[in-house]
Image 1: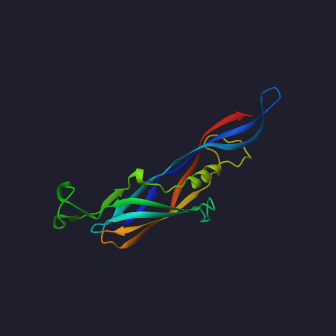
Image 2: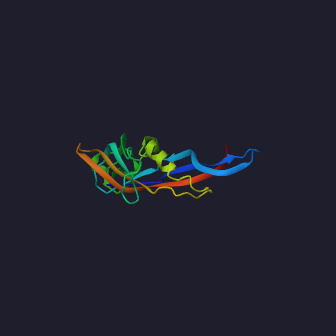
Image 3: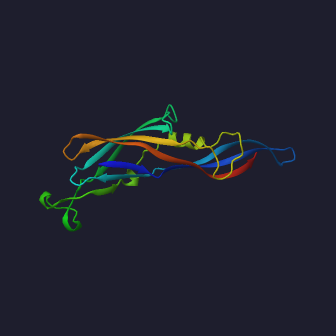
Length: 188
């Protein structure tokens, strides 16, 4: 069984801040800051080989790094969470039935996507740090600009297979897309 995490994103709504002149007009650029960040958890997909056991995933350990492997969002770069994801075995019942005897089952590769409401792999701290990486305060930003960090998630899923044996599945370097979604201006 293999797994992949795709579609994880952090969008940053940025505001460019300008000084207010004595006459109330916009003055010098003071910096940019993240006003709102919008995390998207992504989709956890499994490819189960024909004849494989199923698995109940009970926990995940996520280590956030940048593209070169350096820890990202330290000291919060490691995130542990509990899960309850039941990945089906690589067998199917005839005619699409949901239940049948084992002797009626046929070994078949199965594609499975974990329910989105049970998935929490992008921590709040990592999402905030990712959004904050898009602004450095040295240049006025426009939509689509920003030197956002290239964030990766190294994930270890742990659980028990159908026979009760503890198993792990590793997902190395799952990408988190970090981008500037919108830019507005404020005069302060």
